[in-house]
Every structure is written in C-alpha cells, then in structure tokens.
Amino acid sequence: MLDKIDRALLNLLQHDCTLSLQTLADAVHLTSTPCWKRLKRLEEEGYIRARVALLDNERLGLGLTAFVLLKTQQHNSAWYEKFSQVVSDMPEVLSFYRMAGEYDYLMQVQVADMKSYDSFYKRLVSGIPGLIDVTSSFAMERIKHTTALPIVP
Picture (cartoon, rainbow, N blue to C red):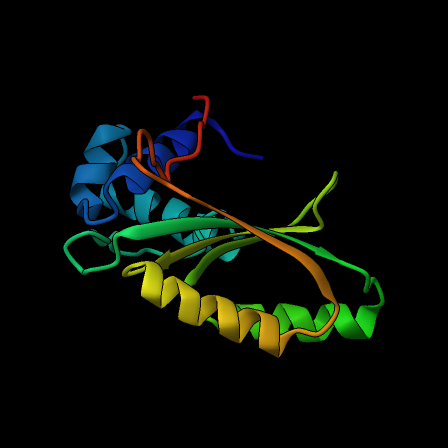
C-alpha cells in the first residue's frame, strides 16, 4: 500500500525523473538512505516501470499523429497473438489497445507525414489478415498531452 511519501515521490519523479536523490529526499522530508530504499521498493513492486526522456516529435520530424480504429472478424487466441506481435513490432505504434464497443482495437501512430502513414498502413493491412475495417483520424493540433498520472497525495 502506498503512503503519502510514496505518492509524493511518484509525483515528483513522473514530472522530472532526473531529480537527484538528495532533492527527492529533501522534498519528502527524508534522509537519502530511507528515500533510496523507498525508491528501490517502488521499482521492485512495479510502481516505477521505467525512467525515460520524453522526446519532441516535431523536432524529430515525426509531426503526423494518427488514431487508427480497427475491426476484425477474428477473435481466436492464435490470431490475437500474431496480431499483437505484428503491431508491437511496428515502431510507429505508440499506444495499442483492445477496446469494448464498435471497434475492436485502437492505436496511436506517430509518423513523419501522410506518405509515411500510407507506407505504415500498407504494412499493417498486408501483415494482418482478417481486418474488416481500418479507420484513421489525424490530429490537427495537440491540445493536451501528458504522461503524468493523477496521483492523489
């Protein structure tokens, strides 16, 4: 169970994972050793999955964001495993969800431009038999984007 200090540490880290151990310890009113032990426990228990740098997609020439909705007639486990593996191996796919509702799957795709998306689309539909509908929507403007989860202290 997470206590107030654990939640505070997680909030600090998800906004800036480069904070030093001493800065984190000071922020939660601990000395460095107990703070380090908490961080180690949070990692071991899976609360902290990774520490990463968030990159600017525009500066990297990856300015087109597509949201792709898919329907399939296939719902067996062998097809699902193959489909999941094919999509997981596509670096353009940032997020991939199995859905309830009208569509079976949703993915967020990041590419350079429409030509790059067309290439991605062709690889997707040729690599996965059984898709009956692939619908794409393209983001015109990012209004909000965060990786920070709403952790209540």
